[in-house]
Length: 277
Image (cartoon, rainbow, N blue to C red; front, side, top):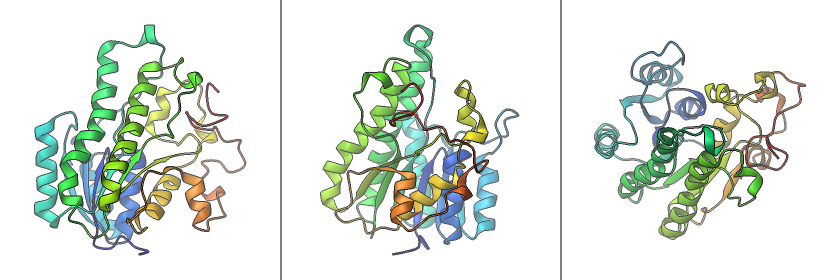
């Protein structure tokens, strides 16, 4: 399979950044996309809503269903899944992209912020997966793809921002468990993480990051596409890096993804040579 034509994707955090880019890449194939995010009305600080992305998806050749949903709320996720199935007849792919970030030390992490990260990241990934799986198990080529890093117990990733690392590695652990539980049943459960920092609104949370040293969200979207068109059977439990996936798919021009070609790129968190390494 080389296309997502006719496939139905349920993408969390799809109103901007990487989630939006994955939605638009799938739309170019003629996919159905449930755009699941909290952003139902414009925010002066953050561009993009579920409605603006839905319009972009339709313009790109896909079919869109914008759904305002806080993935911390079980009833809202249940309603979002039900609406997607009612509109498109099923769910083929879940992309767990929604994530909360707070890169501060333990004494500078309010417990409300800690709770938010855990409710959105690990718990949200578990909940969305749990509620989509009954439909994925009926699909022809089902995938769960979570934007989460390779598992690491290296203390250098835990000391600077323990709350965030715990929540993000929680997403990785959910991936590990789901892969072993549902991979043998034919669901491709994998994680994807960028090699470099990606120029999204989240970089505003990272002090000292120059967007010129980042790559565009499209590199993650193209890597996700290369994963999601693969045959799902026996393809699970992988912690994939975006440019490795694209290299294996034959991509050689990575300048196209640079915000400013020629600039030294900042490695992302949780990878060797990355920030705080």
